[in-house]
Length: 152
Image (cartoon, rainbow, N blue to C red; front, side):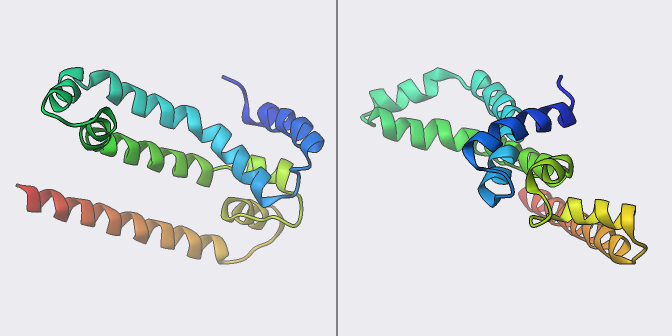
């Protein structure tokens, strides 16, 4: 495991060469680079558990290889793709280090705004943001609970 600050310094050196500093696309690329391995591991684990016989059965029933892959494999992988995407979002949402190193003054994300608010000023913004995040989490949990009850 590499500390995020060391990874951000290494990305800084690379992003200087390609002109991606203080740039929305550079920060997006940094977020993708940090969250892709986690998403890949989740989807790869689900893919390893899928029986190949399902796709082969669809091919023997007349489906093309692409159609069998889309209708069988991708459909069975959708929950793991969604959970990997959620994990990638949470990882990218939690990063204030990359924005501090790669974003500069002109680019501010919500985690950097929270960090700056904690370090430099006393304002009720952090309390309001944390309350909104808690309310959104509770609403999401209630929605998942209602959807699971509907299935039973």
